[in-house]
Structure formats: structure tokens, C-alpha cells
Length: 575
Ligand code: F6R
Image 1: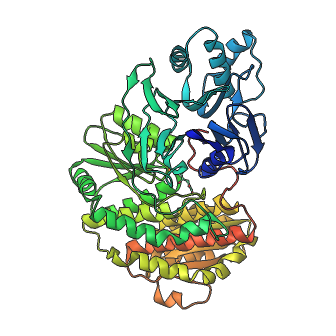
Image 2: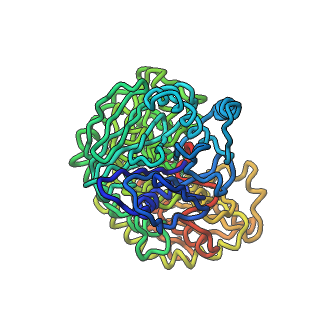
Image 3: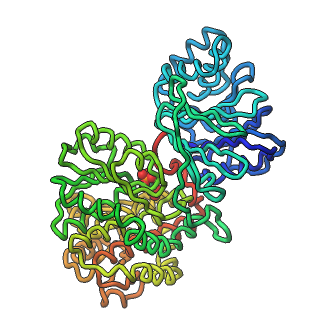
């Protein structure tokens, strides 16, 4: 995944403005970046520095997450054509770039990077020698296989061409300027008015406005829409890391969502409840952390007799049987995860109905859905998802309540706040874990998804090998790995006898147990992370918050980068 931003303004602006906007998308990619201001291409490896000089009326920029070609200045975007007449930034993957490149090389084009994206600028340079832009766009959309959001500028020009297929692209209109970007967070502090691209469309963005066209160059109408306000800022402020800032925002995010489900989003929520009641089969589809939230939700719903299944989206088509009576519910923070999009495409082909819960309004998944609700968690800048998980889980609990799950949600945010206030105690318990090469997190039923989520967070940001598993599975092999001092985080709900017995099994083999529990007797023991709630649903969410704090403190102790862990860009979609 990468982030792109283009600005076209009535007045001259400094290149630093382009980079400031790009910085807001840094969570989409952060190994290198660059911009083009109509005259010069400027590129660098490393985090975005917002010190661009030079005044311009139009510019394009890119923050990269490398897929094709290593992290080098040459491979950073923008990519200019041989004679510099065409410059592009690209998010997506041109799957047939090698074929296209061969043809262009035969016609004398020289490539300077190993990226698939560079082929785009050469393709346009070649085409524009004999044809108008409109015809070359049509040719490109016909010739390119794969996904793309492309911003293209001609040398010396002050307009931007924006092309889209399957990679996110949105055009925001702020006072005096238009901003085309990968998502609304690039400009959500400046405007709430935006036009959303459909696939195989392009826009010509000029200082006096913009026009949309289909792939054949026929004008299409794309009205401006108002998207919901984004409450939290994407600025780290005094926090050492975005991750801690975002964890501390969890109580507010939960309150906002629950309020909205009873007010402005009530009609949509009621419709979802009706769909769940009416559908013969309900399948949740999601990835990573969102999958764990849906698994927790699947548990809540099973407790009240709502048959459902949840699948990891990348395996969806191998395990799901979908027909006209099936409701597929996608959970996705970004709303852009390609595996989820593919699962939904497959579900549609089979005649299923699609609902979704996303954090990014008008994202691809939202627009593919028959019914979609907004998570309203605000921007998640840290790559590791935290407040989105808590809000997704709260949503699932609210849904289960409609079907009879007993829970008082009015004090959920209060309980989270209470736990967060005790974070220094959790730090003391967590820090010794930093010395371990491996650790295990065990749960059962309600706490199994939580165990998986905690292990994922620990792996993702501290790089310690962690396995989150069902306590009952330990004895079927994994227990052989428990040695003297191996940390085992055990999530014990009330006095769940089974997990207590699993905990004793590993303790007998020398494991160092870190209990996360609401059991009053265990809570009194030193080294225990005490969670204050008697309710199953709330315990699941609070235990996960405790796990997020453990992951954070272990990673901080190890001096890991935390907000931008290696080998991971937010939502593993395209580059
Ligand atoms: C982990 C994390 C990922 C995402 C996953 C799905 O902290 O952020 O596991 O949860 O890539 O992303 P979304 O929810 O955007 O579909």
C-alpha cells in the first residue's frame, strides 16, 4: 500500500503543503517519498520531511511501501518519462508491466527504476507523441492489467490527471484548492466535501474545477458529497507514539459509536439487524485484527443463538458457500483491504448480500456494500490497529445485545478508562517479557479471539514470536515448547475452570504466568492484570485493551519503532 496526494490551487503554494498532506497518509507507506511540482522531481528514502521549497500551483506526491523494487531513491515516486514530459505517482500494481515495458524498450524508452509504476509515464509519453490525452487514457485503461490510482502531470502544466481502478482515490474540495488523494484523511481537517471515483474513471483537475470522465473519455457526473467529521487529529502532539495516543482515545471512540448507533446511524443499524434476522446464513469476512473482532462477535452472537461463521477474507472463497440467502458482513478499518474486497466480489458473484462496518467513509468496501455502517473511530495512524479493534468489538457486542446478549454498555467506556488509568501497573508486569524469545497467549471461547489479538499485537510491534491459541489445544503439541520461564499470558474469565486448568498445566512446566482476569481471588495476587467487570462481553474487550498495553510496553522497552513496524504497512492490500 502507498499513499498519493495531488494538489491544484488557484494560488501558488509551497511544496511543503504537498508534503504536509502526504504526511497524513504516512501510515499507508513510509519507506520513501517524493513529489513533483511541475518542474522538478524531488525524492528521498526515509520518513517524510515536510520542508519542500519552491512555489507551484499544482503538484503530485507519493509515500511508498515497496513491493516491486527495493527501497531506493530511484524506485521512489514520482517517475518521469525519458524526456521528462510526463511524471506520475502510482498506488497499485501493474501486473503486466513487464510486457508493457518490453514494448516500450523496443521503441527506445530507457527505464531508471525497478518499479512497475515507471511504465506508466513512458506509456503516456509514447502515446502523447501521436494522440491526444483522452485517447491515451483510453489506451492505458485497455492495456494495463492490475490496479491503479495514478496522478499524472505534464511538464510545466498546472493541472493533474487522476486515474483509478481498484486502488482508492478521492477528490476533496477545500477553499481555493482541489486535493486528490488515496483517502479523505489527506484533507479531512480542511474540508468535508469530496467526490469519489468509480473504477475505470479519470478526472482532470484544474484550478477552476474538475471534470470526471469514463474510460472512453465521455463526461460522467460525480457530485460532491459531505463525509462525516473526523474527530481525532492525525497529529501525534505530545505523545511518544501514535499507538498510545490511539489507545487512550478508545473510551471516546466507543462512546461516539454507541451514541451514533442509537441516533444518526440507527436506521442503518436497524436494517442490519433485520438482515441478520432474515438471512439463512451469516458470514463475517475480514483480516488480521478485524478478523479477531469478528471472531469475538461470532462468539457473542452464538451465545444468543444466532448461527454465524467468520472467515479470514483471503480464504473466503475456499471455505464459504454463498447463495442468495447469505449475508456477508465485512469488518475493515481501512475499507480498502484487497483480500476483503476479493471476498466480497466472490460473494456478490454467488448472489450474496453484502453489509460492512468500516472506519474510512466512502472507502471501496463501503461503496461495494448494500448496507454499510461507519465505525467513527477517527484516523488510525499507528500501523497496529487498536481503537478500531475496540470499536469493532463494541459494535459486535451492541449487535449481539439486539438478539438478547445481556450487557450494560453505558459504562463500557468508563471501564476502559479505569483500566487505562492503571497502565503503569501493566507496564511493570509487561516489561520483563521483553527479554523472552517466545511467548504464548491462551484463552478459551470468549477469550480465544482475544488471545489471538494480543499475540498479533505483540508480534507486530515488538517482533517477539507470540502464539495466541485455544487453551485446549496446548496439550496437542504446543506444550512441548513451554520451558522454565516461558511467559504465558492467560486470559481467565471469572472462574472458567477449563482455562484455569490449562494455566496450571503450563505452570507445572515452568511457565511464567501473566493472568489477565476478573476473577476476584486471582486479582489480589501480585503480577496479575486485574480487569474490573463481571460481564463476559465487556471482559473480552477490556482484556484486549490490557493486551494492547502489554504489547506497547514490551515494544517500547525494546526500543522498537512501534508506529511503523517493519514488514507491515497498514492493511496488506496493494502497494
Ligand atoms: C494489525 C492490523 C492488521 C489489520 C488488517 C486488516 O494491527 O492492523 O492486521 O487489522 O490488515 O485491515 P483492515 O481492518 O483495514 O481491513
